[in-house]
Length: 284
Image 1: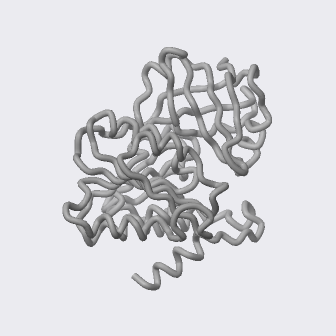
Image 2: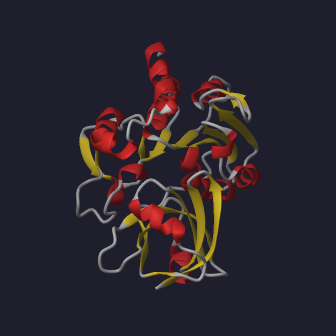
């Protein structure tokens, strides 16, 4: 049983929780995730990235968006309540070293898993440029935390309510055009965003890592729901990843599978980001 220590709302439908989990806090590395279950007998198991950890306090931080039954129920729990199933750390840790100049690109809720990776890269001595994007200023998260880890930071919003009125690919292309160009780009966000970040960096030959945690289901490699095509191989995100070479990921196949039940999940929701990315695709 793991106790909820703290909870706060970061933006519309996005919540942050601190959970008492001393063993996970002491062992976790950047890029790893946990599996939680609200009802020990009947509940759905869901994977969530470890956004931060405090080894001294014995807590880890998770950030999640309410998108279904389990995340809705999780958002209703208050500090003092317990989670009966809480397992981790899982997944391969991010490979951290001093690469040199690193660009960290976060889209919406993707900034949550990007945070611990940026933190580890900064601690390894890298020069960090951060690009954060969202539809509106209200949907930006962790801006202060990411600013503290960054040598420079660019904020983009679709409607111009904060920072530049642009998609994250616009400043990313500008940075890749500079001399010297980045040594590494890490992009985490909606699959369509990661696809176009990878397409943006590919002509410049800049190594690009993406995190495909959005497609995970069971989180243990048993269900096969998170299989993706990477190059000429089939990989399982939860055990082989969640991070892969963005230039090798078959994003179209991944998004096709993610959209299989979109009609039931979104009820005719019109995604502004996907509309803009489709327009960008036609220009490339």
